[in-house]
Image (cartoon, rainbow, N blue to C red; front, side):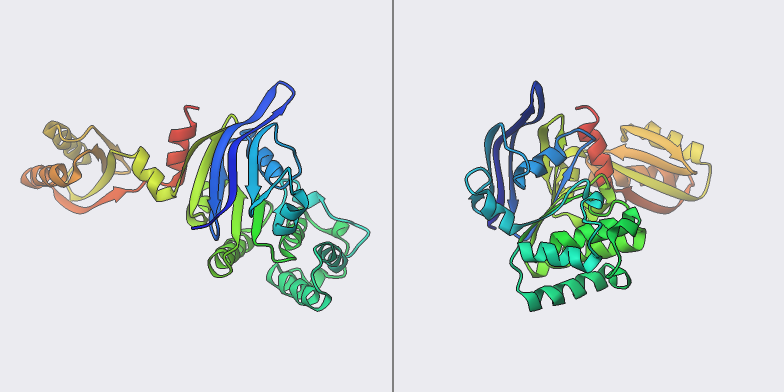
Amino acid sequence: MTTTIELKGLTKQFGEIVAVQDVDLEVRKGEVFGFLGPNAAGKSTTVKVATTLLVPTRGTVVVGSHDVLEEPESVRALIGLLPEDGADTHYDRLTTVENLEYFGRLYDVPKETLQNRIDELLEFLELSDRRDDSPGTFSTGLKQKLSLARALIHNPPIVFLDEPTSNLDPIMSRKVREFIQQMAGGSKQTFFMCTHLLSEAEHLCDRVGFISHGRLVEVGSPADLRRKFWTQRTFELQLATGDPAKAKSIVEATSLATSVRIENKRIVFVVEKVERKNPQIVRALVEAGLAIVELRERIPDLEDVYLKVIGGK
């Protein structure tokens, strides 16, 4: 798969403060890539360098085969950007449509194409009834929608989104996520997305990168990262009859589980070599006269992985 964003040794300093340090990263064409990390980890600084808003201290950044230092205008022509302060970057003296017309003309979108694009985006983002209003009268959520429309007005092949669903209600957040998936899959647009919503990243992103204190810590698909950091597997067992405390004691007595606890009358235990140990645990419980309703694995989510990776950084 073609690489469309490439960072090599990217470092960005502000005086003595190192915001981003020696980051190497490749993002593929048509990929939705999630950039995850705590506040002040370096996410937005990385985006600002990649979108030519900041100059790197060291290293190189190539976007769509163009170096951000050597060909910044070419990079800007290829990208759409929803910045972290996107809700406050409109011209209040212009209407919604006039704002989008202005930015569309900056990207040389043909007039007829531009009008159709404006209508499509306003309808999708449920802003059609506010097309003649000033953004100065908008709520923060409406401004966020307009910022997203502006980032997509020229149908760019590469889109940088910094917290794209912040300030949006749950229904619109879902629509935006579905739209991103559709564009990445059908149009092969590439999305580089910073988000604090780990559940959003898990369901939307093909791969994610964890950044902490300016350093890229891990990169991979959510599934690959789960497999890497969860060598032990957690199961929960529900009884039809019998005392959960008795069941806990029986599982502990087998010495097959590394930990056993009771949660909401369910027995939760952690094991390795599941195929060999789980049948023995179940057999011990049944032989003790306990009836089992359900045994299922508790799959860790991206938040679990994030806390395990970032928690110690």
